[in-house]
Structure formats: structure tokens, C-alpha cells
Amino acid sequence: ALIKYGSLLLLVGQMVGLVLLMRYSRTHVDGELYLASTAVFMMEVMKFFLCLGVVFYQSGSSLTALRTEIYNHVWASPNEMLKLCVPSFLYTVQNNLLYLALTNLDAATYQILYQLKILTTAIFSATMLGRPFSTTKWASLIVLTCGVAVVQVSGSSDHAASEDENRNRLVGLVAVLSAACTSGFSGVYFEKILKGSDVSLWIRNIQMGLPSVMIALLTVVLEDSAEVSRKGFFVGYSPVVVSVIIVQAVGGLIVAVVVKYADNVLKVFASSFSILLSCIISAFAFDFRPNFLFLVGAFLVILSTAMYSKPTKKRALAQRGQALPMMRVGSRKT
Image (cartoon, rainbow, N blue to C red; front, side):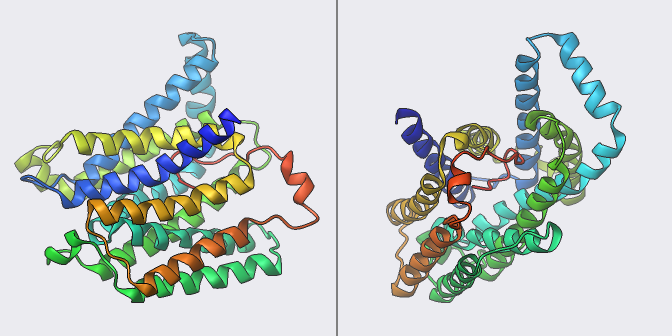
């Protein structure tokens, strides 16, 4: 029971903590605003070395064994590396989009709109993997779409958004919708690659980490090279910004480990509770005031999550003993 409910707390903490910290770091700025592209690069570097550390530990803390693993799965596997460049690119784009979304949307609205990744994942799963869905699951996707639409038209926002004329709700909406699409496609593409593979989750993330780091650095050069040369790579960095980078890098690793102890009901509860908690904390921290339409939309999104995650009668027993499928660490699929 301790592990089970500890997993719940970690899941909720990861879901809510990153969103609120990122929102705070983008709206409460003393001086220069930090560059999102550099934050994504630092996060990818940290995540890459964390995965290296895990593989080093699993290899018996042997540098020779680690070097052999890296050589066999990276340098001697160019075809695998090439295939993984696609999700690496999409995840890097997705992380940059999340910063853009949370610059223009309050945390609660973002948390709800980003649940559209359930819809995009389902669509790509049906088209790319040929996965069938029950009537209940398709109905839940319709409810989800309606809930998100209601939240969007509600117009609710926090105090930071209302006092800053540079924040654009439409830009935030486009960013979060694009992030949901990249999340759905890259997650399903990654799952398709993993099918029939005996390569560990950590090795896969090292394979994806290398191109992710290079793509993130290229993004810094193409988007913000002038700003970096003029103000410095770490302009606007503060303890809060560093916390965002650490939580984003470590959070995905924590979720990948603890989700194996969380059953389906627990994951749904964590997802639903994170939405409610984001609304409550935003009300106090960001002067967020949800209206009636927002509450209706939030209820529909939470309801759709529960409907979608409900196992079919034929698979209910099988799912209890089913192992956790591999996922891209940091993809925030839960």
C-alpha cells in the first residue's frame, strides 16, 4: 500500500509540479526572460547523462561494460539511430512548444487542453498500429473533444495573463494543440519501434538522447543565436528555472519507474487529481478564477479520461497482470 500510494503522490507531483513551475518561471520574471530553447537543451543533456548513469549501474558499475553497451547500440546500430531521429526531433519540438504554451496559457487551462494527447494518441494508434477501440473509448474521445472546446471558449485565465498584453491565448492554444499532436505521433512511432525489440528502456533513451541533444542545440543556434551572443547562454536563469529543468529531466525518469506500481484506476485518479490540484493552486498562486463553462469543460475532460482508461470486459483480467509497456522517458504519457 505504501508503494502504491507513494506512486500516486509522485505521479501527481510530477504532473502538477512541472506545469506550475514552468508557468511561474515564464510569468514572474525579474529582469530578462530566459530562453526556452536553452532550457530544453540543458534538460536533454541532463536526461542523457541520467540514463547513462542508470545503464552504468545496470552494467555492474563497469566502464568497460558501459562502453560495450554504447558501442553495440549506438555506433554499431546506425539504422536504429536513424529511425529514432524522428521521435527525437518531435520530442524536442514538443518541449519547446510546451514552453510557448505555458507562456501564453494559465496552468489549469494548459493542463486540460493538453489532455488532447489522448485523442491524438488514439487516432495514431488506430492508423499506424491498426489497434481497435471499443465504442466506449471512441465515445470518451468525443466527450474529451467537447470538454476541451468548452474550456477554450470559457475564456478563463489567470492574473498574469490579463495584465501582460504580450501574452496571446490563441498562440498558446495552437502551441498546446501542436504539442498534443507531436506527443501522440512520436509516442505511437516509438511504441512501433519497440515492438519485438529486446533493447532496454534506458538504452533506447540514450539512443534518442544523442540526436535530441544535437537537435536542441541546433534549435538554440537557429532561433536564439543572436540573443545568446548578446546576452549569454544562461540569461534569465534563476533557481526556479533550474528547478524547471531538473523536474522536467528527472520527472520523466521517476514516472517511468513508479508507474509500474500504479494500476489503471490509480493512473486515472492521478491524472484527474492533477487537473483539480492545478486549478486550486493556480487560484492562490496566479489569481486564477474559473467560470462555470471552465468547470463544465474540466468535468467533461476528467470524465472522458476515466471512460477511456476503463478496460473492456474481455481484457480486464489480463490487464491486471500486464507489464508496463516501454515509453520514452520524459514524454509525459501518463
